Length: 241
Image (cartoon, rainbow, N blue to C red):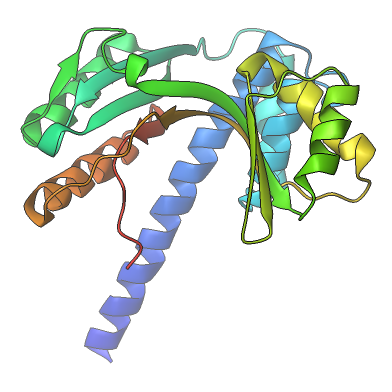
């Protein structure tokens, strides 16, 4: 039973570590959203959006409630947003978004990930110019004209809308996120949003060689293992198989 037990134990520990990382990530986002507004999702659309994403990712209810309760109290952590840009293996471009209570620790951790994979951090603004910063809302549907009419009726500034394989995706300026989401939910009762977030989308995708892809994936894994890292945006076309 020894070998089987070791494999099961490894799987359990790996799953626990992934869950811990997920809980930590959402705990910080919930705390920040509640702290920067009010700790009431009915009155705080940003907090409500994070709660919805956390529930979709199966974050435990007690984790959500604890983060909000902590923000409602006095004191606590003093998190702040930090963004780093860099050049990865094979000419890849990366944007690393963090929430940190210790910027010195965070930049050291992120720099270490880049250094260990032969990559380097870049000056602020040198990478983001190759991306579009957009609100993205995606859901099942087949009538983009009807969706567009609903958004225009709500005075939403739409950058683009596309339909592919029965999925409609709306792209809008980040500031229009909540207005666009509200307009869609009111126009189409019962609509379920598969994606509802603000993203950096590359203006052009880049394909890596197998060797560079291996190193790039190592860099992504290292960054995602950093507690302070929330999101990593990049311009690489990841193989589906």
